Length: 441
Image (cartoon, rainbow, N blue to C red; front, side, top):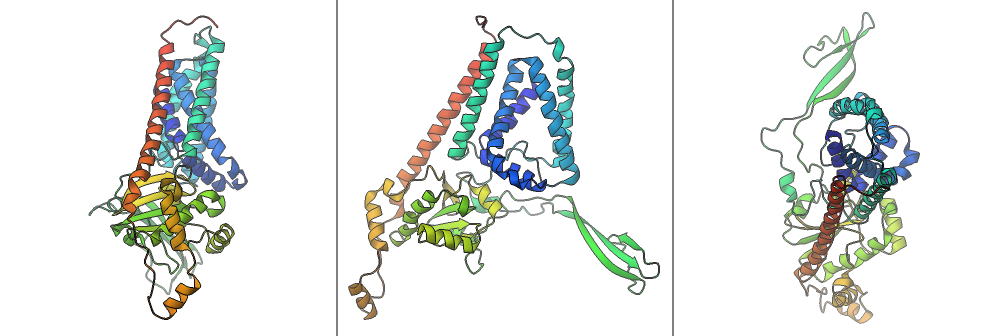
């Protein structure tokens, strides 16, 4: 039961965030010089999460115990060894065993696995003494059905955005509040080692910051090394920054804006859904019409590549720069969309859920098209003659868009709730089957 609950939790939090699992597996591949396997990160992430969830359910149901206990032994042995290697060499900060729902250090993960291995060994060595039902075919069909359902649910979360958002950028979050470090919060503690060479003997010795030699005639400084020995407090959001072309951070300006800010986030333009980038063109032009609305396109892609892709797709809007990890954390979609007001996240969409401007109101699309059209020759002459200095198209408020835009988001949320209710119902039904005497298969 303990193992089943742990595996169900571990599998579920990763199933709802398949891109997060893919990012973590990508970190593993690069840490172990296996970058050529990056293309397998997403399918492998979906498979492993579904496998863990189903393994946990099957442990509780008690299906095919001899085979399941053997598979459990091999699975836990491999990952216990892997986490031991991670704990020693620390190539990645955390193993991602529980996704973003519960962050453990590598040593914490290893010791957790060692505790679980006690239960695994108990089950493994008594597997041959276990009684199994005669419904072999029926149980394998249920296991296969569970795996198919879990994998499909994970793909659904990949297609949209995670059903449950364990990251600090969930809808309703006040970003500025999540960036605050409380007064008196513990700071990072480092141990610094200084290496000096004795000029007389030629030998190098290590010293601390408290006892390093002051005699420069006898000792010559060679190198220093600082190692983090105790992690201090880190605000849930500590890396939110959006840079313009001059290197100015616009984060404070965006978070203080009393109007609406729509951020289109693409951590990598070359890997993004290009049709969604083109849909964003209409939203970028909405600034011409609505004086309570600002559009930001944000990416971690190098500027030369940005210019090339923008030109090829005729996007017509500029990009701001941000850290790739931060962008991946904000929204699990490429691109994704984030709506802010007063620094509060009002809405978040994946590229498959965010509508084109004409889908909400065809009239707005026409207005945007007229407002963004090139100035004709007659108007240009009038401007040059000083008859008027500029055109003003601030004729509508973004508030007009908001109800329907958020309604669509609410509809998607309802769809997600219905999906999880269906899955939970199926799991409960399967759990009840063990108390019913089925006909022999």
